[in-house]
Image (cartoon, rainbow, N blue to C red; front, top):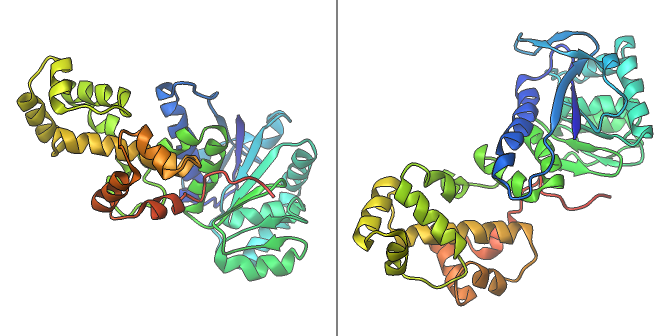
Length: 330
């Protein structure tokens, strides 16, 4: 996907870089997927050759007129303006007319449009949100609603995706916005990116841990992780594993305890929980079916493990589907 991130002087540093980092992380993780999608080509564009962020950093940019008309997606991150009057002055100024025209043209040609926080005012000012649902920063909802009466505003939503455009709320919602596009191509990749960046409904870091990543430091533990993951649906003992790996159960115990701070059995449970969590969040499989897929003979064992190791019920895990996961358009 060819992505243009449109920025102006005063662009909010966090929102802007959150978008860039999300796509960059996704591209960096592509080689680890069995069937990776095409990489994202992300360019920062403006009305000139550079802008200064809200914190004064100079950002080189490509002039908007220099990019081709075949951009797949344009994202407008937040501008660091908290005063609604100043924000409206910005988006309605003669200087902004060119980008508003370009946004309208992109919509007519079928390109995707997205914005977060105060950046949503650019899309609304261009008229591309008329007749659609949209969200914006919660504190700007009343002003947005008054100025753009043809937009169905839902400022309580973190992310609002329609056939017209995708809009997101403030600050952290930039991550949800970018992840929604990654998820639209590969839900598995989006889940992995979110875990690397610690995004989503996670109370502790424990739920963000990727077993194959933490196992990389020790060759025996890494081999154990790969062996167990390849046979996750099977019933096996630690004696079986040790024999297959050419070691002893005692050596395997010492290795996992030293490297991971847990027993081999506990690590297998973590691998199984990791797979079960992904299936709960990205499929409609029954709990019984998921339990069988991850090596448990009945759902009761899996339910008990989630309660003991995650402090959540399976229903809570399934209901905690992250806001950036695709749920269709309206």
